[in-house]
Image (cartoon, rainbow over all chains, first blue to last red; front, side, top):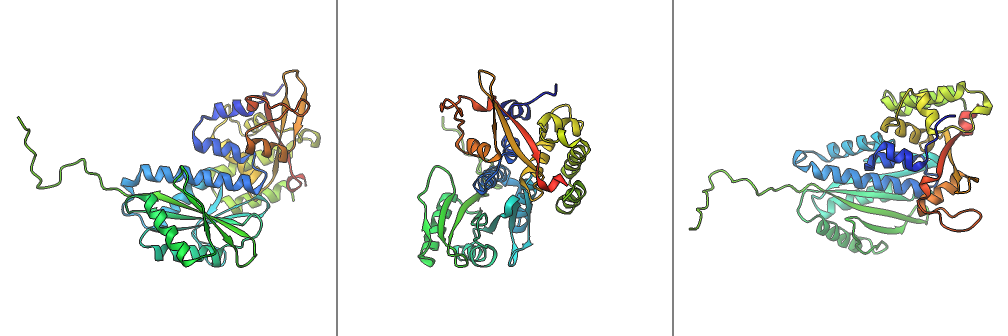
Length: 217
Length: 132
């Protein structure tokens, strides 16, 4: 008789790392809520990986960072693409079964004005707001210190510009969520705002020309 | 749709990505089975189809693509076998709810099943897209 794996056994065989667990869970997703949860989980893991290697990404452009994210999403089985036409050139799209569509706009934290431009692209140009297409993401590549403050500042700016947008309270994660009524559909459109921490200013090595501090006897 | 159409779509959406080849092997294997043997495909079935002695990331990715991407060639069901050896089938929707809530309620007793993933065996059923 053919061997049959329980879910536990298959998970154990595959190893407990996050990408493999996401791959397994892709096989169980049957609703748009499942699909969104998986995309967000994948983005969280990818964001963490980019942060771990931020010392190698100090010169990366927005597009280079985004293309790396798309590659990692595809490696987990997401049908992800960069620069695809959906009302314009979207930074990241993920398409899935039953017309699920998730769009992310990615911006380096140059200024709140710059990030707001991305938000408007996501909200008014790319997103459809239709069922299964009613959630998106702002990925903010934080080259400045204190990513949590960058996000807070950005959301304060967004609230001033768009009084129709409600902002969730901060939780234990780095992400924050907003919601507003999509102008196209009249239905709720949810956006998650996620910082990708890329700030890198190590202070462990002596700078050139700096004198050694003498030991105190 | 047919297996040929599914394979064309895989090529269009995934190009020369190695995982597409794994998906094609699975699709070809399913298409080669008699109709009555296609309704209870398991992880082990796909390991046999792809000559993989152990499951790996490539296999899990391929299954995810066949189930959850626009390819949508498979639905995932599950069999729950309780401590008395009685079997209960979970539909894709029921399985999704169990996984989302991280809780399986016994269909007859109404009690939560501890460590439920130890008792759930997923099986895969071709959708209409692969039935042709």
